[in-house]
Image (cartoon, rainbow, N blue to C red; front, side, top):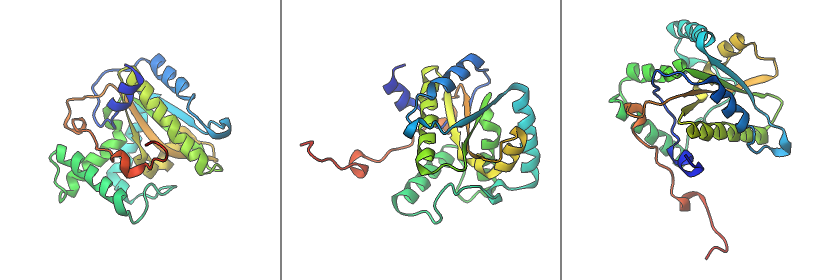
Length: 225
């Protein structure tokens, strides 16, 4: 597919089919994504890729933790969202929640089913490949922005292979479990996980397209008349 289709067809995939991904394709995506722009060519990303037995062993450890702890109460190393949320950002986040949980028939007043759906993050939505993306904690906002560019590049490249992805900041809630398993150096901070696999596009969690703000809402033009 061309780059325009890759961008327009990308979703945060929350259900994957039981089909393995060629390890060579994963390595190709991760290597090519490194062409993402970064200020001063710092390339501030580190990637840990898991599949097969190591992924199964890791998920078993995570499930034991979830059995004794609500991840929503876990401390994170960085603040994922502003507290409190405000303005259009609050509206967009709430609207997205209505779309996602509504598509699954989960009522806003049902905390048990909402938590069960949230916890699927920690099984990577059954994706066969899991990535953890870290950044050196000594770096600053510019490098965090570049890190996002790398993640989006790999998401679009994955679409070129017919794959889907789901970037997951939810993993910041279990950063210590991830770091212990993968033996992160002390200077590395977990930013997110990324699920990769062949998406189940017929699943209710994937059958809606999150709306985007109209161009005039976020862009001002000068000299384009």
